[in-house]
Image (cartoon, rainbow, N blue to C red; front, side):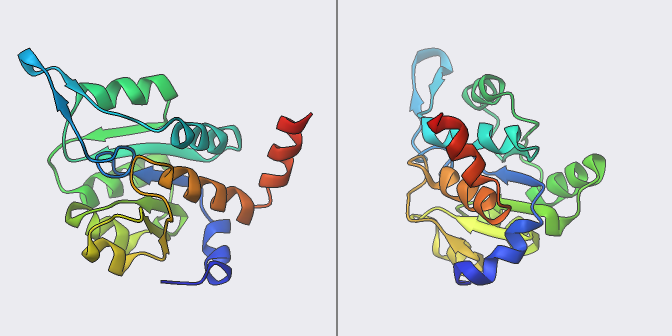
Length: 177
């Protein structure tokens, strides 16, 4: 894992943050009700971190191999820029998204937690994982969050991006006024 100082030049180039959903934005738990109704718990701090990135002109999105109405509802609630839910390989989906939006792989920060994320973690400009990520994902990460998935890990990487780009002090001043 790179030291934070070593990561700053990479973080300064970030123009888009994509994350996996289950195990990153959630604690990987899924509550199933009758009739296939599904519930997921999302962390408010993660959502606020994504909104702060968007306010500063950084695009955000979710890439999930498991289509879910709960994920769609959260994406709509946050007004995220990109949503991909499909069992297609994530590398292919992210590559298409980056090409269509005019971004390069080195401008991408990606947070994943499991083997389905390995290809994207390997290619991203900044590869991040929650504290409780699978060992294979942790081995590819340049940043391992102190928080677990669904408990503020995405907020950590959002703040790191904003700090490295010199935007964090202005946001603190804005909210302290």
